[in-house]
Image (cartoon, rainbow, N blue to C red; front, side, top):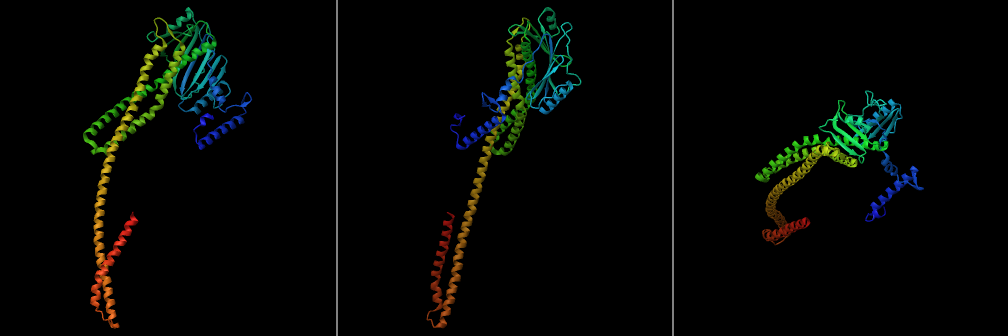
Length: 453
């Protein structure tokens, strides 16, 4: 932590120290310790995540029914449905914060898991060796409280490999049959990815003595492959829906580009409005699809990881799970990525077109501003000339009144015995008054100019 603070300013350093103090305080208040030292306040969650979703322990022969429900109503609805199911089965209701919960049944177990956008229920129970019927009754009946709509359902059976149980492969569709050896050849995983009348995808596991824990791990991986490949495919209909709309935007942008090349900046404002509308529509579609496309990539990655962990060896005459899903899932994911890339490319092109049109608009505005400034300069020059004319007239008018006052003053001196003719005084005062008034006006105008600077 100290090394991370190198290069921080004082404020950042104080904030980091304050955060450390708060975390240390939380750790001390929680009372958790490791080797006698206070534990970090998120340590329990970080360590517990590794064991948060343990795999089921499945005896042989057994049946597993797993259903994935979309969290249409949010986490609260998912927890309420689990609480209702717990009460119906006579089990204790878990805390709202749990993400995994198991309910023990007289024969078998019901497991619940909460994920980001879906919740899963997994019920497993032993099968009667002679009849192949479950010892317990499936909880997925009319009284089951569903937290949302179903996205995927799996019916999986685990049996020992023998001639009798190998006949269980016959009901599968041979056209889409996937049969692979897994667990280093100790087990076979069979499915046709078809759904029965109730909507379940059937999976059969035949093995040569897998332990209950390994059988549970294998069953969980196979179920997750079916769940996550279905969730990944949810992005395909959205991509197919958006593709024609992106094509329309591409066509409109091509028309705009041709119009820009032919018409130039004459229709810049109208073109800018059109490009802005296209960009808004494209951004709305991108925003509505960003989560689904991102989730599809994540789900597809999980499917690939689960398939890789199986270590498949295809049985002669049948297709492997990996080969089958690659031929179906990979093209869908490429379509999704293609639509994403087209959205991104179109967004960049619209931004470039918008920037070009805005430059035209800016140039046009600058041209208008230049014309406006020129017009203002002409008006200012005219006002200046008018002002100079008025100043000349004002000098004459002021001089006239001042000379008149001097004339009256000269006439007033005659009764006092002055020997000066008032007409001469008035005549000689005219140039002096005009020069003085002109000098005063010039100084006033100069002082105004200095104050403007």
